[in-house]
Image (cartoon, rainbow, N blue to C red; front, top):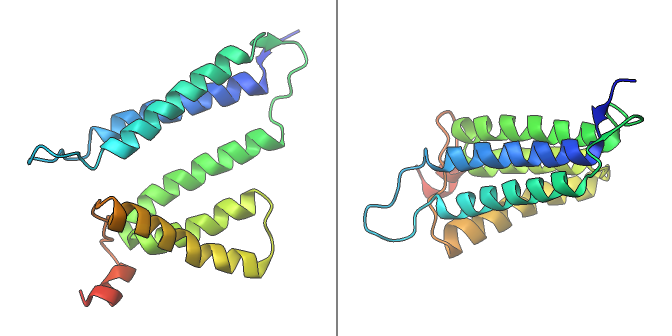
Length: 159
């Protein structure tokens, strides 16, 4: 019978590949010329960790091949959906800015994981971008990516 990678190995390989793409993408970010930490430091560390955790998950998935592995179960569909959402999110940030893109994406991610309460989703749409904005742009001092077509920050900063 045809053998397939089991789901744990597939998840590990997917995480590793996403992490490697993230590592590559961090080197597309301009480095800081004044010798300080750069905007790529945090994404690079996260991508490196994602790659490492993916490799660990792949190794832990022994035996990698088994006869009865399902092709796609519910968790793998969620991973594929999250990957698709992440690609759209990166595109949306460049067009609509960080706050609006993060707000909409957070709602989709919570729906993928089973949250259906309208009040909860509305709260997520407001709280997630604000908390992330506070942590990354205010506390860590990273410059937010501004949208080419529209950006909510223009409303607050009079841009």
